[in-house]
Amino acid sequence: MRTSEQVAGILSALEAEYPQALCALQYEKDYELMISVRLSAQCTDARVNLVTPALFARFPTLEAFAEAAPEEVEPYIHSCGFYRAKARDIVLACRMLLSDYGGSVPDRMEDLLRLPGVGRKTANLLLGDIYHLPGSVVVDTHCIRLSNRMGLVDNLKEPEKIERELRALLPAEKSSDFCHRLVLHGRAVCEARKPKCESCCCNRFCRYFAG
Picture 1 (tube, rainbow, N blue to C red):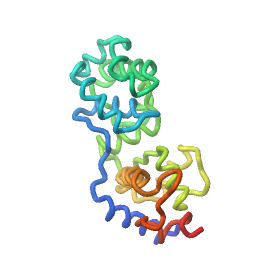
Picture 2 (picture 1 turned 45 degrees about the vertical axis):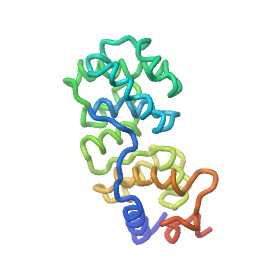
Picture 3 (picture 1 turned 135 degrees about the vertical axis):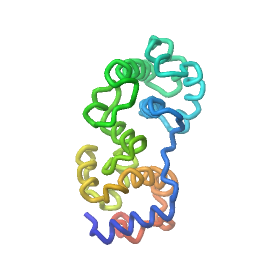
Picture 4 (picture 1 turned 90 degrees about the vertical axis):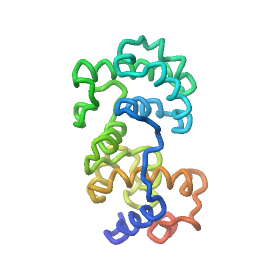
């Protein structure tokens, strides 16, 4: 684990390097973010952003998704992979938003986890980006890789354990933005196969760089 000074250093370095800590997925309505995150599983955000304009034009409202058969959604999301399961989850989740939550994305973890296709990663992203809930920690592949390399967690692979440790370690009001910055940093610098350690803004605080 890093010291409080090292954690603060990592936070400051990433804030300076990536001042705009925004989700890469493009959306206008809250439920569209829910759909986009479901599509992003085993798929790149760039591919999702190519697919969703036509998808959201064909199904312009929550009601349109809820009234659709999954088979109607499938052609629009085919290139995202696992399209049958994703189409089913999207339609069923939209139906549940209407039937159980008044047409709104719920603002509690336990309610979000009831939605088909929504796990803790998605729920935390929705809570952080839509409701700006402090303490929202999104543990994706970048978060797993970087938090272990930097030494924020010690050789953990289980997302829930990483989420719990990061929530205890990070300032609650910065946790959501921190996770977005990890994604940006993981794509640009701390790549899976060959991290660019010499040019990393966090290298002086990083356990991996220190060897």
